[in-house]
Image 1 (cartoon, helix red, strand yellow):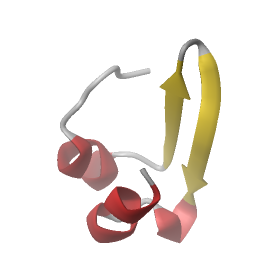
Image 2 (cartoon, helix red, strand yellow; image 1 turned 90 degrees about the horizontal axis):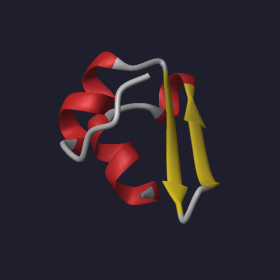
Image 3 (cartoon, helix red, strand yellow; image 1 turned 90 degrees about the vertical axis):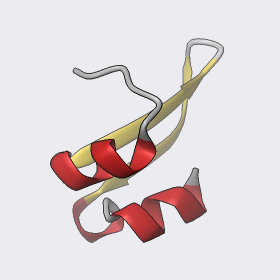
Image 4 (cartoon, one colour; image 1 turned 180 degrees about the vertical axis):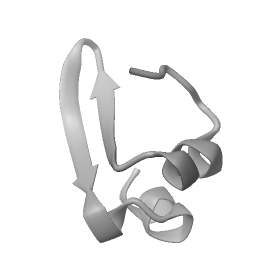
Length: 43
């Protein structure tokens, strides 16, 4: 687990990305969706 706000870095090195707000998962991206440009659009 990495807690980070640098979204392009996280999308470049991750297979899965979770966005958490107030202790709850609000978005989960996997596979091809974890690309810097797509990742930024979802989050």
